[in-house]
Structures are given as structure tokens and as C-alpha cells.
Image (cartoon, rainbow, N blue to C red; front, side, top):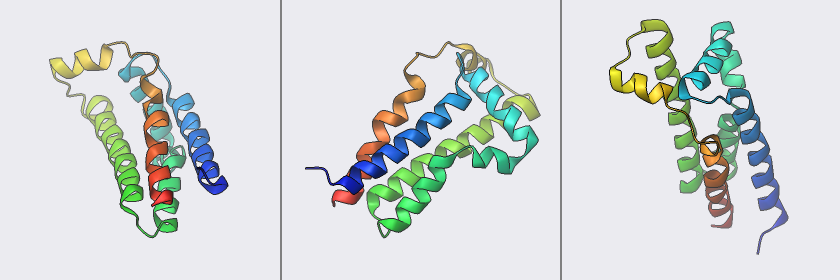
Length: 131
């Protein structure tokens, strides 16, 4: 059913995703953005290095010869990081946040919210390699 190499890629991705979840973990979205901005302030390159699943998705896209599922995985990761960067800029640099955004930033996150990627992304890896 599962080949060893498929399982290996899924396990590697899960470990990398757990790393990302752990360093950015917080009780609210504002807390997560604050932790990320602390790294970003030091260096944009350090911030991007702290996103190893982005590099994994680029490697994976090349490995699968631009399979549609690998492209979807990369696109989601890219949009995720771009959204975080735009939100950090809006909150910490421009300091222009609407009332709705303030409520969203201060609302407590469910404990499982940061782990959604761990449940979602392995399916893209499996389908990209099994196709």
C-alpha cells in the first residue's frame, strides 16, 4: 500500500512541520505573529530559514517533476508565508489594524489549530508520489 520512500517523505515533512509549529506556537494569532516578528527583525533570511517546509516543498516539486499535488503543496506554503509577512508588516510596522482584525488577533486559538498542516499536507505528498 505505502512504499517506504513515500512514508519517509511524509515523516520528514511532519518533523519539519512540527519544528515550525513549535517555534511559532502561541495562544493567540497576535502572539504567533509576535514570535515570528521577533525572528524577522533579526533577519528576513533567518525568518525564511525557520520555514523548512517551504524548502521541502520546492525540493518535492522538483522531485515529482512539477506534479499538480506538489504544486498545490508549494502554493499553500508560499501563500501561508506571504500572508504571515503581510500581517506582520500591517501589525508591527504600519500599525494599522481594523477593529475586526484586532478581534481576530486577540481571539484565543484552539490548541489543535497550529497542527492543521500536519493533518492536511501529507495527503498532497502521498498523491504526488502515488500518481
